[in-house]
Length: 325
Image (tube, rainbow, N blue to C red):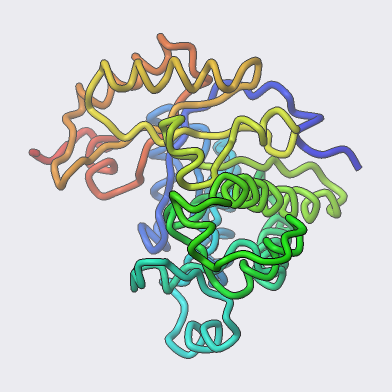
């Protein structure tokens, strides 16, 4: 079967919104007509956070949105296990399936290692399970990257890198960390590892007898690609994903223009919508500021925009009663 990216090489402009994990569950009969009234045609519903899924909430969203011709993409948070139980995380740790930082950073101990075959298979299976449900327009990957450039340096990565690079002897992790003699080789390997994980998800979706789009939320700056091993332009070039949504979370017009122009150049002829945010540093943007950013994204020739996120504040704006900042 042809991949969705080969069939859907041109994305129509969308007016979308992300619905974060645990938000607004159970009131979709009210939310769907409200979104439709305000011109939204796409919802990215967080249906999986790592290995945990919310199928019931996803189905409620789809059932409510379908009569209004609102597409629903299942948003999948990759690698993170913050919503899993302590027992699950402890078991993953015992199996050496979690990312390891050279700084002993406890914050990454809840991230799955993206080169571990068991983790790749598990996340691809989660995506396949969700995509099989009726009404799912696409799978939308988030956190499809490393936690930083100082992860992952687990024993499994040591073995897999040395095997793939055909290296007989290195000082692990010293040779591979930033400044190490094989750091450039290791970075290339990390970059390809994330791309391979995206490919694994694409391959799993191709097993279905229907076309399911594959997209990803990505970081905004080109310099972040190597740092986090997220070379999304290559995913577009290789036809692995149908589109990406750069997370342009800024209120600065000049920053949005700078980021946006570079992103559109990197994307080439591939269509990408612009990710925008409604709150920054605990402060809500005004309705006018949000509208101006949407217009700026349109002026830059993005293929629409996606708002982060369907919060109580955004609902109040759509209801015509925005709360004060």
